[in-house]
Image (cartoon, rainbow, N blue to C red; front, side, top):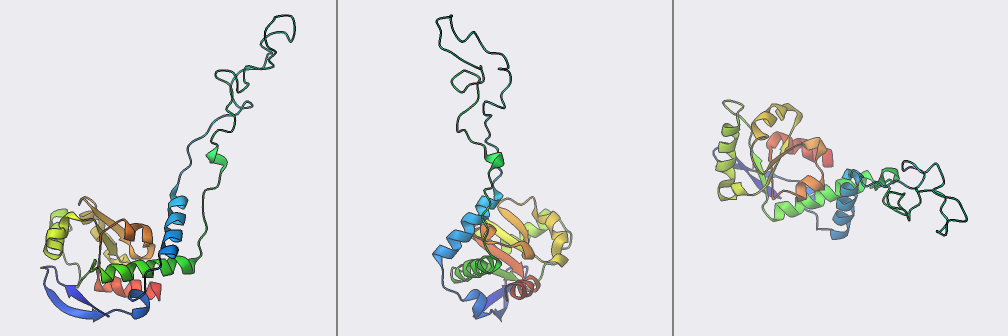
Length: 211
């Protein structure tokens, strides 16, 4: 399998071979869905929380005598049937574990499957190397314009190697561009962006990582 490599002017300068076992897989909808849902669940931050009758304030004294008043008997104003009382069966997600476990093989396989599909859809762009005169947003935006042209309005995921971390400063203010370290790539950021862009050096790191 081959893919074109661009220079910073948007010109195709060569083609590189991609391993079939990483970029030539068929799409497995069930696996991708399972991993995607688990990653979303692991990102959830439970905030909905209600107090039961033992946690609301007040209610230490019996509202009125058990008998003789003509009214219904009550033992505490913290009862769920009172206004301001505790809540019965309300959300208590601070005590709930929403995380779902997926093994490493499944996560790695899902990344390969999504990358394979993006390659088929011509949504992966390889650049020879990143060489900016200055680490500035406008300089990197010019590079993106040359490579993506009309597709510059689409969302782009830029994968960076450890040696390229200084480029984050030039990328973080460009709209619809997400920056991710190649070691942290998962199907959430792959599926949430239309295109994937990386250098040849980062591509080599990604292949070692997924091998």
